[in-house]
Image 1 (cartoon, rainbow, N blue to C red):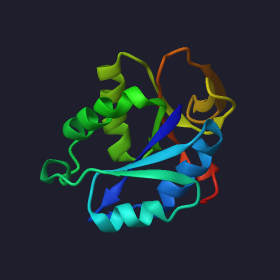
Image 2 (cartoon, helix red, strand yellow):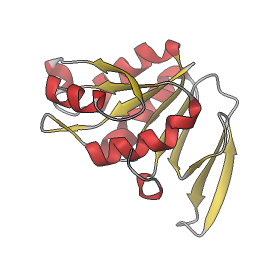
Image 3 (tube, rainbow, N blue to C red):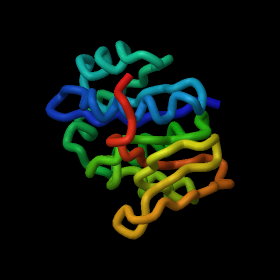
Image 4 (cartoon, one colour):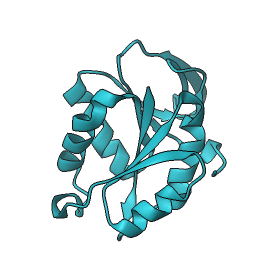
Length: 153
């Protein structure tokens, strides 16, 4: 199955740095589809990133305010076609993805620093002083990517 990467859009423009680094993190998991909740310019930028096989654009005034609830409902509605739902670990994504996970009745894995395989991830704990390996058996893995550890595509 494919991976859904939630892109962050700021003032109508794609947050290219964080999205491209998150794309590097999830590329090994399969075909990557990017969801852009914003205008055509942001979607065109996302389509130009290496490794993106499909761009889904949702251009609704309800989504243009950066509110977590409508974005979470959109992502949860698309979740049936994806094995993984990921996003850069930004304030927006850390607000949206826990809501998505709750709607899907799965756990959310935050601040992933390494993707070991399709079910196993590493994330820092204890203020970054230890690394925790997390294995998820959920049908859909929902996680944020700490982008500092990944190179942009």
